[in-house]
Length: 193
Image 1 (cartoon, rainbow, N blue to C red):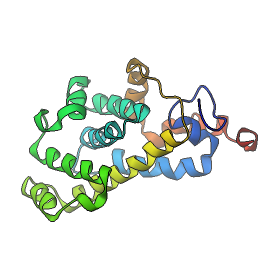
Image 2 (image 1 turned 90 degrees about the vertical axis):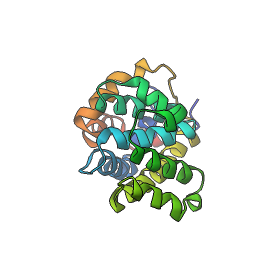
Image 3 (image 1 turned 60 degrees about the vertical axis):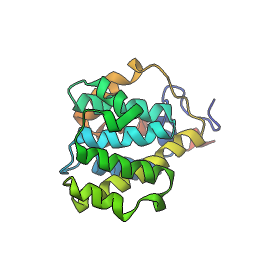
Image 4 (image 1 turned 30 degrees about the vertical axis):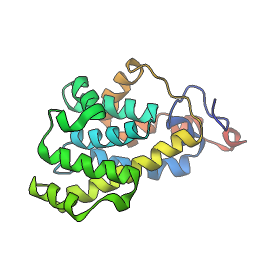
């Protein structure tokens, strides 16, 4: 049960975002740039980073929705998404992405754990400075998003089927466009009482 009154039809991060659209819009803009914007990492790879961090934080809603979005970008490959969550070192992903997931995993624990050797290993596999930067920022941002969802005690459905269609839609339309469907409808001072 949520710690504050949230729209019951908006599980996970959607409820708190509808509660306070003034903060939701910049949060959605950030995730849009990080996960959907132009980048040398594919959208699927960036979603895998978000999924990986969210799974390590045990945030059910986030690792399921971002796993569904990653799967949509990866041709429906749910098995790969599951493998990254469980054992990314043996997943069928590039060596470069493995080094970036190593960095993301360290950021998830404590940013100070990332070493020069970790960054050198990523560079050796072809990671650019932008890719390293964005990996760190995705990991840091998803720790914030995860704590936002968990800290307010939001409803987080466990059934992966719940996330599949929405995952395809976000992959196709982006975060900002999809969020506009619930921000105006549930916004307003009355919802914050």
